[in-house]
Length: 470
Image (cartoon, rainbow, N blue to C red):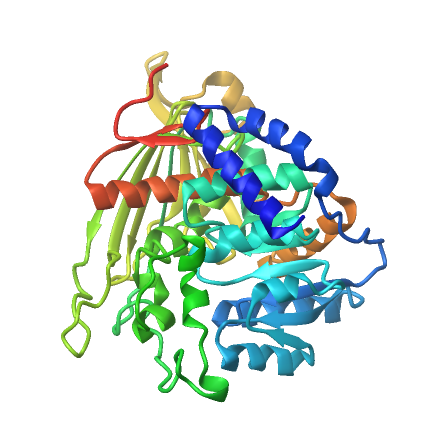
C-alpha cells in the first residue's frame, strides 16, 4: 500500500469515528475499499530465518536488538537483524555497525528494504502508532514496544489496521509471556477466587536524580556534525501532526518520558507492565467504563539550572471500574521504591501473583488464599470456606502454592512473536489486548490533567467526562 493509501485509510477511520460508526463496521467498509492494494509480505516457513529491522536505536531498541540476536543464537538462528534506523546518527551507526547492516535516518527507507520481514519499533511513544501502521501496510509484522500507542485514536486505528492487513503485532511488554499470568488465569477460571472484585498492583522506584533524567550528550542536535546529527524535525513528527513543532530542546530529546507530547510518564512507561498482565489473568481482556487518577510532582520539581524538571507527575495513582463488576487499583511513585503486592481479590479467595510487587520479576510460585470465616456448628467453633462446602471440598482451607516456570520472560515473548509469524496465530499480547490496556492508561492521564472522572464508550471508542448512556 502506498503512503497515500495509508493516509486515506486513517482519514476514513477518523471520519467514521465522528459519525459514530463502530470499529467493526468501519474496518469492514475500509477493507473492501483497500483489499486489492495490500502488500502481503513473505510467507515464512518453519525453518526460514526471519529478518528483523530495528526502528529506534536508543537504550530499549538496542536491548531488543541484542535480545532477538541472543534468542537466535540459542534457537537455531531463528532470526537476524538486517537493518537499523534512528534519527540520531550516533545511535543509528552504533546498531548498524554492531550487526553489520544498513542504517537509515528515515524509517520509511527501512520499510522499503525488501528483505525485512518484521520490525521492532522502540521509538518515543508518539511515533508508535504511525510507524506500526506504515510497517503493516508494507507487509511487515511488528514487535511494538509498550505502551503500544500514545492516543486512543491511534489504538483504534491500529486495531483496524491489524484486522485489515492480517499482520502479526506483538506489544513489547515481555512480562505477559511469563508463566505467572497464565497460571493465575487458569486458577481464576477454575473458580479458586470466586467472583472477581478487585485487581491491585504498583510500580515504584526511587531515583535520586529524578526518573528519566538520562544523560544529555553534548554536541548532539540538528546542527551537529557527523555522529552528532539529529533529525529533530523528523523526531518531533510535526509534519504528521504527531507533536507540536518547536526549537531544538536536548532535555525533550534525551528525556522524552517527562513530557506529555511524547509520553505519559509513569502511566505509559510503567503501568502498562501492570495493566497488560492483569488483562491476561482476567476471563477476557476488558475496556474500563470509568477511570480516575490523582498524584503530583512532589519531589522532582526543579533541574539544577532552576528550570522545571518535568511535566508528568513523579507520583501517580489510578482507579478504574469495569462493566463486569470489578475494580482496578494502581499505585506508583518515582520517589519511593516500596511496592504493593500484585494480587486479584475475589469473594471466595485471593490470588497473589507477585508478593514482592514487581510485575516484571519472576516468582517461584503464586499463592491462592481461600477466604474463610469462623462459625459455630453443634456448639463448636469451626473454620469454613466462604465459598461453601463445594469450594472447601475442591480447594480446601489452606493457602495453595502453584509453581511457576522460570524461563526468561523476554525469551518467551520473542519466541511467541516469531512463532506466530510462522503460524499466523494470535500472539500473547495482541493488538486488542494491548488496546484495552492502553485505553485505561490514556484515560487516567486525561483524568489527572483535567481533574475529571473519565468514562469510556467502548462501542464507539469515545472518552467523555459524562457517564455513557445505556
